[in-house]
Image 1 (cartoon, rainbow, N blue to C red):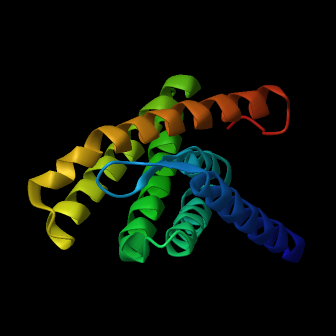
Image 2 (image 1 turned 90 degrees about the vertical axis):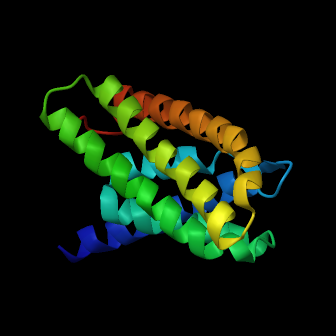
Length: 170
């Protein structure tokens, strides 16, 4: 029992570090922010660890990266949005798989819902909280590109890990 808790904590920390690194390696966008592959790590963590551990890893890893990169004004939004993404992805994927939806489709649909939450979350934060108004719409395409890349990465990596036997199919 204790070894399972230690293993879960270690995996959560490992995914937080993976999210940090994959978010750190990024391309800047026109308004403010960047495009990165951190969402792929967040979604993969959600699928492998589950909702709460995935949310903790995703939220902490991405938020720490915002702070290190000087985007401190985004840190509160990133914590909530990235954690929310993991919760949505894990819950929806589990539900769809229980409903006997084909796993690949379930993972893609869950990833899409999580990424839509991310795009809308950052638009709302920039438009309302940062007072960018409709100028915040300039980042929607870049957030959508990031989300699409994250979806593809997470589903591909999950499929590879499952086929290699490293992940037991649920």
